[in-house]
Length: 166
Image (cartoon, rainbow, N blue to C red; front, side):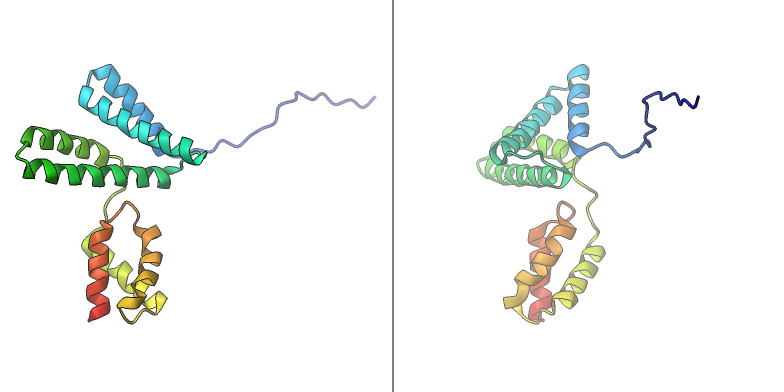
């Protein structure tokens, strides 16, 4: 009699991966709540609300790239607010926005050095074959995915203009 005993268990390979940005934000929220850091807690709540709003609006689950885009948008809003508050001589409100900027910046990827950005711009110009300002969009289309969250796109744009107009 030939009988095999099956346990019903399948061996699965264990995959170790880095924590997603969304999970890191959630963990930091829990830590801020435990430690009583109200400024960090409130800022992370704003970030989580913005992420959730975009997920509900678009009926998707955001990946790390999309979350970085949300954070970039929030940082840009904060920078604009800081400028307006300082112009109105409301340093207390400007300081609050600056504190939020510091907290949000912690979730952004490591910024590229100017030299690295210059190299990527030169490669993109060569790749796109752009020769003048009218073809700047082609260069930006190549660079945007590579530089998302890692460089100030306004600065990149001005560097491209200088290279294409030279």
